[in-house]
Amino acid sequence: MYPGLIAYQGAPGAFSEEAAWYFGGQQAALLPCASFASLFDRVVTGQTYWGIVPIENTLAGPVQICVDLMAAHKHELVIVDTIQLRITYALIAGSADTIEEIRKVWSHPMALRQCKTFFACHPRIEAVSVYDSAGAVQLMATRKHLGVAAIANTRCVDLYGGRILRTSLEDNPENYTRFLLITHLRNYSF
Image (cartoon, rainbow, N blue to C red):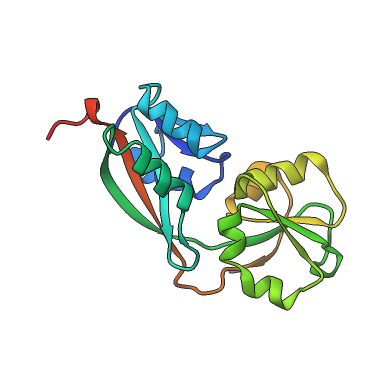
């Protein structure tokens, strides 16, 4: 276990939060960040001790913004640990009762890329990128748009409401994301 405040990108319910629990335990002090830039800034400036960074996915490839931010801070940050999480997506509806009623699906761009087969099978449904998959469910629940659903972790239903219309939306069951646990060099002793 890694004690101390852990920053992750996204709203509660994000897969990054799950990775943070892996490293810090279920009682860990977590800080959700709206963007990856904000997460990196908080680790670099010492506002948090740790950061959770998704770096690559088996279906969608590298999380380029995180690769770029790691490179930009290569003299300040160190990778302490890593984990691969199995990523399983659900289609979560707010007001729609069936998939046929859905016109738009919101999620993080990486999540949408991992569910291309679903969109190929439902060409009338528009994929809409938002900052975070869990945030998409939170946004959907608060705005109550007709015909809108989200792709996210099933746990988001417990947090924000909605109904699961379908599970295992990812294109391949071998869908894993590798997460890094990072800290500032000043916090790490070799």
